[in-house]
Length: 239
Image (cartoon, rainbow, N blue to C red):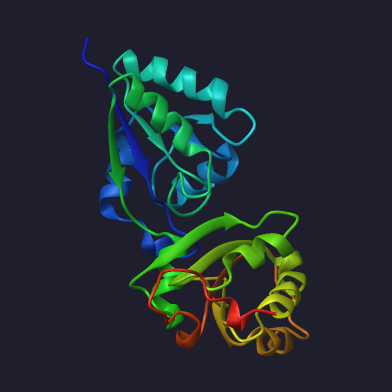
């Protein structure tokens, strides 16, 4: 029996019009859709004209068990699409576990590219794009983590819950106040906003604003902090 294919399908991060024709075709033809939240995905599918699809939940907490179940279905010859609530699966997301398991079982994995908040924020940030590092969600104990980044080359990208954004900016300001910061929020939506400046500038710009959801935060060190004959980190711009 021929094994099925696992499709890793990117979905819009806000604007429904960002769904690709290929993504719609794949989602409409696969036997199963593995998704972070079946209710949200059900609503999304209905909006793009796809109804009555078999869905299974796949999220952080059940990913180990569910990945095994999905692989069993793939080995039976059923095609499966993996989606997240918004954007590209496996980016700071447990989707990589089922992909890894599928690869171990020699199951074909096919990416269906599309929206990704990291790339969307980066290309509109005005910060260096020739080299960047994505760190996902910040750890709870951040001071030492930030200090370890001082002098890094390229642009650094993080996810930050909106409720923690101001505190994170204050912590960044204490460690490297001269870095360049870009805050990307509500991307592709009606109230899309990019805030630029030094940490203190961004803190001031947030006064009176009520942010919710997830923020994409980018920062870059001034060129003088990255110059040097070696690749050793230059901590001269850090307090």
